[in-house]
Length: 301
Image (cartoon, rainbow, N blue to C red):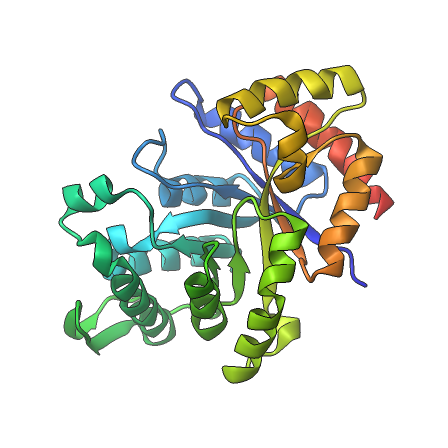
């Protein structure tokens, strides 16, 4: 069984400076992680694709990902321009993780019907692929009608396209249209629940299981000091309206040896990539948590 890959979902706050972001990306790269990810919401302080463009210039090997980008809230032609640029300047390192969104008030503000967001997403994905492959778009759908527009977005290789979501519909969209599936806060047992649907979906759409990524998005809390780990877990769990013990079901919380065991459990149900969220931790704790994970967990797998 191959060792899983690990990316880091970084949190960006109002006071975060460019130097802080680039320094953290360098730290993540030097510790042997595979990628850096950012999230997307009107409530965040950053714009995700602009952030990835900046990170592309400050890292040499890291994949650059969104987990996840709310695609139906943007016009796909603009997304195609931005993502093609990032793909080019990074040397093909973009992982575009997309989702359909979950806050109806955001869609209302943007003039996109909340109950049509799945349709808008599907059409937008088809437009992105056409733009990346051909550099022009000629598309007639239910929502988008685009007639033969040249946008110079052809790339040597498409960005990797992951589909986020915890539902059967998201999984179907992933195996039909994407390169991977990334649900959020899934326990090991949750993947087992979807196992047969994943297998049948890959077969139905003639997808190679070896080329399809089954990922996780999990909070990471660990250290060399059990007391410190508990204090971190107590604080973060309170923000989620949970308890540290409950979090252990849907997050990576505990000692390095406990996390090694948990990751092996995820491997056994087919998870090959972990996006580790360090959201909500101050910078010094972020670096400590990641350093411990790299040296004590990744090296032990």
